[in-house]
Length: 418
Image (tube, rainbow, N blue to C red):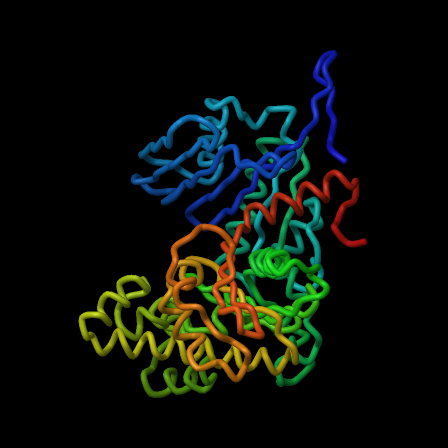
């Protein structure tokens, strides 16, 4: 089903979806045509609110990349600039072919388990979740309100990072703290990168020629932020990130798992404030804290030159990753595939090789030539004799958001819930 609209005597079928990912000082966007899933345009506005703001716009069907610099005061001005760029390509936001705007919203708590058409009640709940997502939800809200002002007549849909992980059983989602305190302050494991984990787990099943319901997959989303998930038959049963995106794997600037008492120790011994410790664990830890770099390419270059700090950082990163792989084998019982995705997962062959080393006992055998080959396509990189497939699956969160948004607005429902 599509969304037909009448323009004069001509009926236009609305199949386009604009996907917006609003950060605190940036807006990423893509315009897709859901008739065939093709991208019509993509771009980024960054450093919003500064004199050095920049917009990079790429029309993906004809035309060349355009860049403009200069002050962009706020998100309203940023989206107006995006609308102008799209209009200059004949893809204006006033087009009758635009069916909806899909928004990435990082935290949906337990209420939002599916994509949801945004109204005042939905926005109020997203605002109530700001204390557990202070870096993300406020920016998402700004993007939504700005888009609503531009096209108040158009469906606006929230697709939540946390939604895919709401299928976790309570044994995986609960922390072992006082239940009343946890419930009063919404303390539990929510998980993040859910849109990516959903897309990659489903795409991995396709690679194996099976339905998602038939496949158990460990998804490793390895970027500057990194997370792992255990997906059983298309449903998440465990994930590494928790109340916030800080928990779990070693990341570019985040510590990942750490003894909670480290916080108290730093308060007492180093006299650090809560804000200082927050900044330490989120912005000055992980790879950058261990060796001063959070770019895996630079770390590998330093390792090749004999840099011991870079080598130690890499070893800690891989050790934590292998611990989660082993844990999720135990959680799932049967694993059909491991899928690497995101910037590091898709491009860093040494990371994949180190993570899979000496894993034959788990049925994992990497084909070194396949692993080393560069490709932008989803592919199997395990040896034919391996019992468990190892895949590299480029993530496509924008396509996933667009698909969920379009399916919702053409179904006539207010949420994706049955």
